Each structure stands twice: as C-alpha cells, then as structure tokens.
Image (cartoon, each protein chain N blue to C red):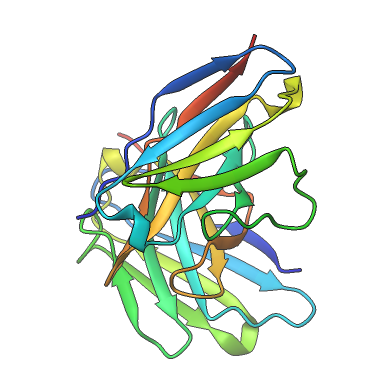
Length: 118
Length: 107
C-alpha cells in the first residue's frame, strides 16, 4: 500500500508562488502516474495535473501555464510549483496515484491547504 | 471538455437502498469510478471500472451502467455511509473528470 504525505501549503498573496511536495512510500510502490487533485472550500473535486513516469505531463485548463508538476523519482517525491496564484486557487490539494490511465485514482494523501488571499 | 452530472443530494432512511446517478455522453464506453469522501477526509475508491469493489468495501456497495447513466447503489444504508460521493472517468487525452458530487444524507 502506498503512503502519501503532502506538505508546503499555506497562506500566499494573489500573484505569489508556492511549491507543494508529496512524499510517497510503500512496499512494492510502482504507480504509473501521479496526480494532483484539489478541492475548494465546500466544493467538489477538481483534477489539476498528472505526470506519467515517462515524463509526460498534462494540466487542467484552469492552471495551464501557471502550475508545473514534476517528480524526483530517486527521492520518491512529487512536486507542484504554483505561480501567479489567484484567489480561486484556494483549496485543499491532494496528491494521489493512478495505476492505469483509465483506472481509478487509487491512493490519496490527506491533503494540504493553500489559501490565496491578501 | 467531458461533463459528468450528479444530483446534489440524496436522502435515505437507515436500512433502505440509496441510488446515486452519474450522467455523461457515451459513458457506456468509459470506465466509471466512484469515491466516498467523509467530512474532513480524503476520498476513497468504493467502486472502480463500473462495478468492481476494492477489498475492504462491503458488498452493500455496487455499481452499474445503462445508457448514458452510471449508478452507485448502496443497500441497507447505515449512518456511517453518510458522505459525499463522486463519480469519475478518464475523459480522454488529458482530461480526468469528476462529477459535481452527491451528498448522501441518512435520515
């Protein structure tokens, strides 16, 4: 079973930047994809970004050009660099694993809260 | 992009059956996954690929699909089933899509 622990959330002003990290571990860990999903306060789940272990990345239109997903495989760490933050980026950000592109989001971290406010 | 539509809320008495729907164009050609999210917690998969159940999820939970609608059915509902439920598909290309979520209230 995979364990995922996010960090790096906090309060940031509009236009600012923040980098989220997600440490993952577990016996026989071999997810094929890792992803970030967010949830604004009182709202539903929104997919943000995915990275394939081959390096391919995809982004939701709402964050394209502002967010960058990356992974440091040797340290089992996933990142989300968030620039030009807006108030509507305020949310709990979850990192998670996907085994197959058409498959479910298997394992989730507990999330880290990002608040964008002046 | 692809859209999934869920009812905002469903209410059911304990011991009865709850059915939560998820509508989408050509959903019959997509694998539908269902998540349960209790207050303050991360989502958990309860059904994957339309009707498969992960280990640890009781057999009271089942999934089905017909036409443009997928359905999550919870039999013999318990107070502990109260949560938000989301459907999700891979919409193709670079599109992982969630439904808007359904709040299940146990009366």
